Image 1: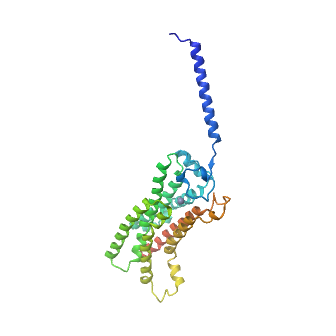
Image 2: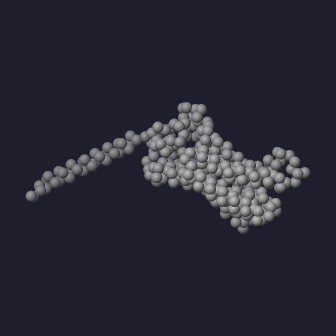
Image 3: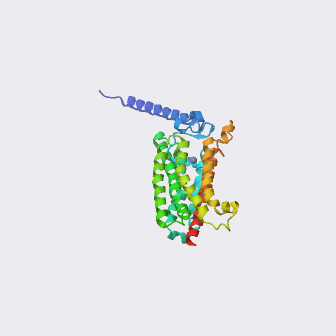
Length: 303
Ligand SMILES: [Zn+2]
């Protein structure tokens, strides 16, 4: 049967009009979607703090949109920039921060990786957590974040352990480090399996206890009692070792108690200075102290 050409062109015009109206409707829908969401509008896996009420990015972001969101104001902006600025600062000042004469020591490589890994893991987590792949990408990102913290806790401690146990022979120091590494493998398994955030934080406590033992040994063996009788002097001498441990612990406590936002119900801390933001700042301080205590320890080895 022959088809009337006029009829065909009419149908084509009708189809294109229909398509146009669908596109316009879609654009209208997109326009109507809010740029930022409230807590109740988020999927369950992205609801981890009920006292952060607003400023959530869409859970349907593409990779490019996730990257673009670094330059927008939402409730993850401060979490992203606290660690991004720290990484940029380290990379920009690489040659001056990691003093050239220390490059001969193998410990420097462990140290550089330890300084950066937890910030890089956290940065990836906070940038891409709202990716449209949803849970499929969220949980691997959480594991990357934990893995970064594990690297910092494990390899960042090796120099401190070696310096603290300097009065013992080389074999003892080696055994202790191997035991520390073996236990840290168990910790890695535990923190990757943890379901709750407090379980992730507490899984690192055994490593903290081992470092505490080393610190006690250092206090007993490293100083001349006549020169360092005052407690304040000891605290000053070891301020970086104390700082590298104490700030992240205080940060973890603040983050798990969700202070201050739990006492304010009008969203005053949605964007800035909520418990997670404060923890990020304290983790950065801990990282800086870890770096300074490394410099002190290497200088101690050289002397
Ligand atoms: Zn974080």
